[in-house]
Figure 1 (tube, rainbow, N blue to C red):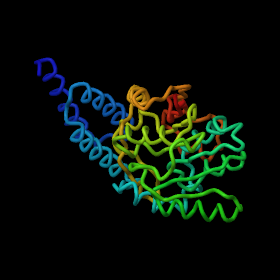
Figure 2: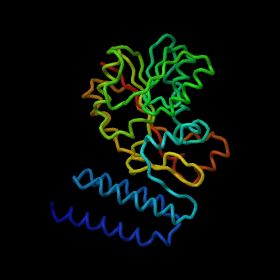
Figure 3: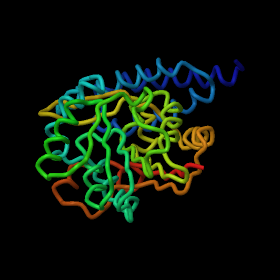
Figure 4: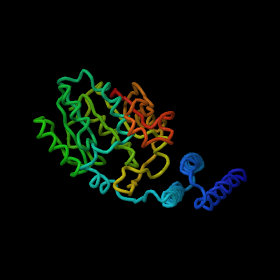
Length: 299
């Protein structure tokens, strides 16, 4: 490694030490940390540095920041545990990310009457019910039994005929090849480190010229290591978030024989209820993208 890069790494370490020393004194540090670790993560990728070590350092400092605010506690949990705790309140609690995606996803599922739709990582079935309402034949698939339980209860209550299937997205999907016209996958893949096999499986189950609608946390936020998934009482639950850049998604789509039809980078809509708007004041979610939606077409 050249002398220039060694100096850059030394400067990064000094900056970490300086931030850590200031944590007990400064009260508006969160955005500084977010921006800094985003830059550092990209630099580490470019120079083959130890990303896991950097992620652990970022997590430690962010949780210390929350503790020093005296407002909220942070708790690390597995994705499975997080959704188990969140299932019953998933659709009740305001979430700027899901709000933003739901505000746009409707336009991607118009004119789908009679189409076979697979909702991967369907959770409590928000998008499954949307597609069913538009006349599609819907299958929902998720790894969380607790989230699926809520979806099935709602399915029974609405007298829908959506088929909900429990399974693991990282393994071969239990569906025949070329059996779906559309695959929806929202707020799922940033929980998974290696997404290449998933793209291949999605391609397999799609019919020719089938559509894959991918929606997730914007890469600029996912690269900030762990992310607060939801809040319960005075505790924020953090889970692993894996950084998948737009260039990575493009590269994987080419390997998986997909064409990219459109990419939308979404900011939080300004027209949201005042009560919810107060919850995200002080963030940059109104001026910078919080979510991304990509439409892929199977070749």
